[in-house]
Length: 159
Image 1: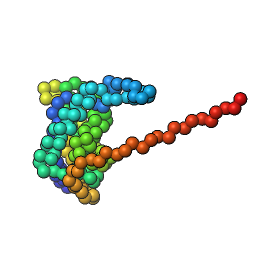
Image 2: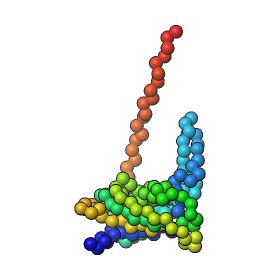
Image 3: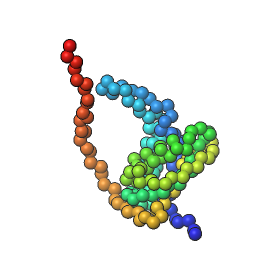
Image 4: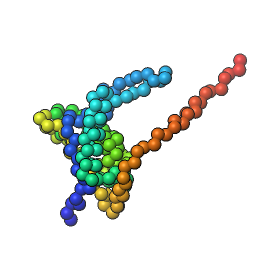
């Protein structure tokens, strides 16, 4: 049986970076938080713009139904795990609004390769077999109000 044609293809140029490389601990309102490294934030910003330009520039709409993803990650050096690169790619596709939520990527195949001259990520998105892909135009996101968290405090001892 022939392989189905992809819904769309993307090529994100630049050295791919994993989300877990050199995470940075910071204090926010008295609590320790871990934020991604500057290299990751820089890569995700550029990758998001490239993905948006390619996806929406070719007339595609945001995917709102389950999809398959096949990615080839061309790295400058043989460093990093495929699952960490895929996690960063999923976040990029959601931030670029290619997919509504990265949970819609039901099946992913990642291949690592080395290309020191032209590092990049090549992505193909496919319709899930037996499922229809629903497309939706991109609408601006509405800001949600923060819901206060309840803090459990142990009862005081009487003494």
